[in-house]
Length: 613
Image (cartoon, rainbow, N blue to C red; front, side, top):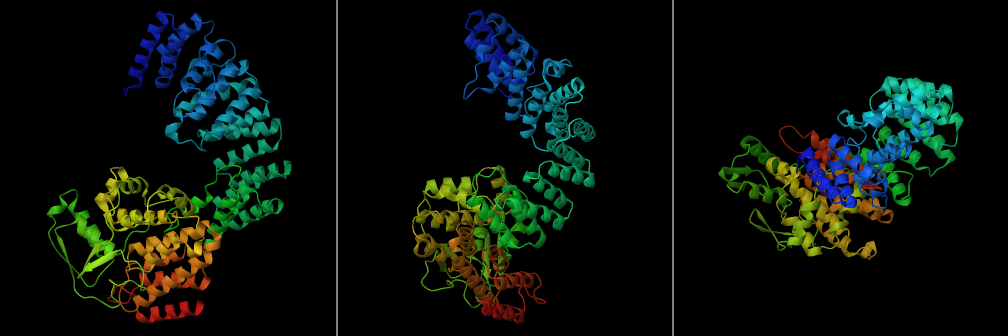
């Protein structure tokens, strides 16, 4: 059944049997399925013609209803064309292509016939091409273009038949541009504007110039479009985006400002303005403002990706940073050197100068069970003690070996976290929304996942993490489990809520990856709920101060990652943000012969942080 042609032949055999028995309905059903397997196969169209002869055109055998099967839609399109109604057939065929553009629905003789341009009106041709373009990326990847080339042939024939129809020329230009025919797109767009000057024509021309890397001409055309219709603010956003793509951010922002003066809630201008301001100065409040706008305006004119584009690849905003412990670095080097060999064969002793995060120690011990970890000394403050008294502790220690306190999670908790956990997300509010799937798990299950992470799933990502960096999978589980805690008893007011109390316990527990995961959950809560921002910003500042205090006496492996996390907290005091940035810089330039910043640097950072608090 993996061979489309064999699958089509099987359905055709059944269709022929049904025809022989006079069962036209079943014959039509099998024929529709055959079309989905091989839409251009001549034998399929021969049987379709036989059905048409037996049923006075056969059109009614392929009705359109609310849940029409795409094969039936395509069959009806071909029969409509054969019945002398090519405009109706073409619109159905284009709808099928818009739904599944990878299939060669239009690769049939009647669509590419030169006379089709004369058999349909230019308005129909333009409408078909515009509807198709609305469903296609710009540009279409080269590998995905072949099934769309029949529509380009249609555009050529329609333009030949109606050479002065401005709307048709512009729509044809839009399709040609998407299919990489830039010169043709430019020619048709220019002719369209000459034939019928209009806002839409100038927009198409501007896009064609932009694809041809003729920036000034593109801007001039788009500005003429504004003159045609000063109230179409989407063109303002297009001009801003074009300028920004060429590094002219200040000029771009003048256009978003002009649009926002006319309508402060126009979504395209709001999204573009926030994205460009963030690109210009890197200030987090632009992204937070954009997230707030999205939350307050869920019914935007169309889906926007500006927030996700800005967060992509950014630590904590769009992805989980890797762990920085020395023991983790040693694990990665062992895995890189060992290839796909049996890890149980790795036997030896790894000496550490001091304790590191218990999650790191546990992960390395589980990955390389033959490796003995030896800790030379316990530096103060003792990493085995929580950073504040009275918090729940997820670890018990046997000398320098951490052991989980909670019992193992349920099978359902394991199943759900393995389906959900991932090292990247579009942006914090999207991560919060995705984690709602964990709302049915108990707090005990979520806490158990933090210290009993299951094996990665048998997926390409899971296998890659298993082979190259098992620690990243553990961090994924911990982050998503903490995000799940955010969905626990959401009816409780934040200040006295169980979810806040549990996460604060984790933030102030022993220094661990769980510290970061819990603080990320709090930061995410601040992204989705402005009322909790002062509280979360205060917690982030206090936790940063504690890291700096500890780092004055011993290395803190999570210092860099946690400082980057603090920088993603909405409403953070500028002084705290500056201290976090300086800590990141200090961590990257340690004192000579050490892996930690100099005490003087840390003392100055702590003094400044205390001042800002």
